[in-house]
Length: 221
Length: 221
Image (cartoon, rainbow over all chains, first blue to last red; front, side, top):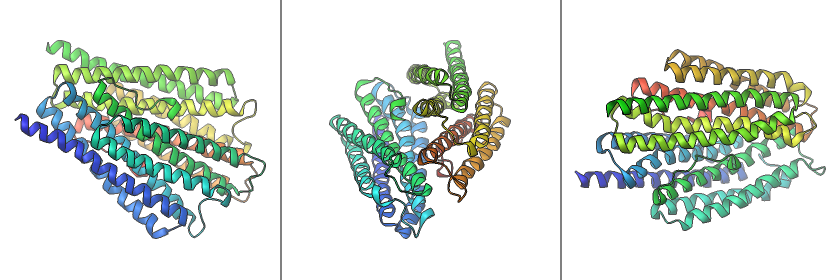
């Protein structure tokens, strides 16, 4: 019985990694589609998001079954409770990649982002991909060093997010209203993607410390 | 022992209602501050959000303790698992009200919203307050009729959200970049507030049907 239980807990963690890998792939493709106005790739990201949603839902169902059947306590309970929260965050990360793809599709054949902001968004995209890659490693190893790494990258993304507003609100900004709307939305999607990774990082911390953390503080929201 | 347990489950539901009441109050004040550029009220909303965060965190801790000590099954387990998800959504709803207050503060003493959009945002604010009020009733009664009511209001909010984009992207829009950024952000905050209510409504549905639902589908994101 205990063996089945340990196997199920292992299964939970493996599925989290599997979803995180799909999320990383969605952000890679979503960012490329967004930067190159690749409509076929954008469509693919939108389509593939359903798979992430489905896997998150199935993981939740498994977690609830484990709670009901195995009645875990202590660290085992923490693993299952965290998985319930992490799956929701991963699902939202997938949505952010999907939103970038949707923006790309709305504006096609035009580019989404005005010239003056392309290098900023290129950097944000690269950083979000890095966040997703660290997240996978963190979920695989439960190593706290990845928590700090994600926090560092998140700080860089927040700074870029603020710089986008500085730019579109400056005198020199010559963009149209559409450019302004798109920059505002895209910047928020990139920033929220990384916030959700922080939220997951906190749950990993909870696994080792037993100290529960709020879902997202308002600073990160 | 069973009596203690039932009392604890009752406590969980009461606390959800308590947090929802604070969220409704935050949206009422946040919307008033936003519409009238009331900086003192905006500060109050920002300050009071910490209380919502704290209550959500405490509720999570209680839920996890109940899982560990009482090992609930069937509907009791669903109540506790749902509470963990609902608290996260309520916390985010509070953040949306706080974000409106923050926008108000950034732009003070200027009004946040350009003239042409004020009536739209007035309507969105009223609808979000209504959503929060229905949510409280739903949490109190577990009556499924409130789920449908929330869904109806959410549809109206989504339509207004789209109309904001139609307006700022139209030829007639004479707003500055700042007006465009603010309209984009505020509209998203209002729309997300109501999405989270939908997410909670789904968890209430789960309480009665036992069928788990995804956190938020991409349509609602």
